[in-house]
Structures are given as C-alpha cells and as structure tokens.
Image 1 (cartoon, helix red, strand yellow):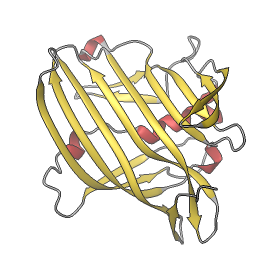
Image 2: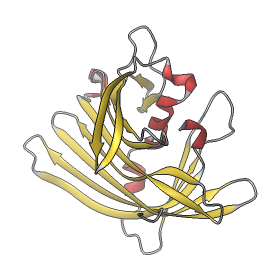
Image 3: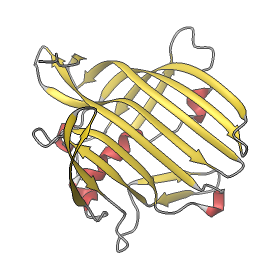
Length: 223
C-alpha cells in the first residue's frame, strides 16, 4: 500500500465550521483550491508537502490558512519506518460502503516516542500520539477508510480531542490503467472546550505527477 503513494494534484473543496461550547455557530465558510501533495524524495525518511492555491473566483481563500494540514501524513502510519511505533492488531473482517475489508486497530506504542504527526504552535512543535482504525481491502491492500484520534489531549494548548476520518477510493491512471488509492473525502473535528472546529474536505479532478509525466486519473468503472 505504501509503495503506491504518489505525488498528486486535485481540486479541493473545504467547508469550515466553528461553534462555541454551546454548539452555537460562530463561523461557517466554503472555499475551493488547487491542492498539491508532494511526498518528497523516495528515501527512508519520507516528508510530505502540501500546497493550496485558491481557484479563480474563490472569495474565502483565507480558509486555506486555517485549514488542517497533514491528512496525507496519516497514510504513513503503515510505512515500514513507522509501523513499529504502533501496536497493530487485526480485529477481523467487516464491510465499509458495501466493500469487504480487514479492520486494523493501531494505538501508539507506549514504548515508542510519537513521531508520525506534530502540531505546530506559535512557540513550539508538539509531537502527538495517535490511535485509530483502518479498513483495508483484503485483495489489493488498498486503504478504504482511516480513522484517527489523539491518545490524549494537549493541555498546553487546550486541545481536548482531534478526530480525523479519511475515505479513500481506487483511481485508475490513464493511459497506463494502473490503479492506486487516493482520498475522496475527509473530516477533521477538533474540541478546544470553549470552541469546536469541523473541517470537511472533498477532492476531485485528480492528476498524478512524476518527474517527466502528468497522468489523468479516473475512477475505475463498476463491473
């Protein structure tokens, strides 16, 4: 699965909503971007770079500055360099969106220092421990759905919870016909006690990039 990670570009729609501790709306905005993900040099140490460029006519481009970053990083949990940071165990088989899947539970290992994801503040960078579940197609090994949450909140910044869910789908590259998994949608919900934020992402119009080529991606046809 990790061997199939590829740099890609897509159109991204972000819906940002903010409420107070009584769930009364404080802000609700919608914006569209050109979204580029670069996994950097394919070496033992993987890095992920995200770029958001407002699409023409976008009146809420500032949403890109407050939107969560790091969604592609979550797939790195299954990279061999990070797998030992988690106590992974298979919980059996289940269905997700009518697809058979192997369910894997992965809490952060108590013996390892968290290293997959970090949260940046004005003064410091805080490494956070994650736990979650993944739904993986048993035949192809493609990620179908990924859910993560914090092992514990970050009292220093008032963050009680950060829950993320990502839905992936197989996409076919043209003209090669190769199928890879790419994110279709994601949600990230953060609870700061007196303030809650919900960020929804939807992705479309994928293009895959390599050093010399650009390939258009489409959903495989349903049999």
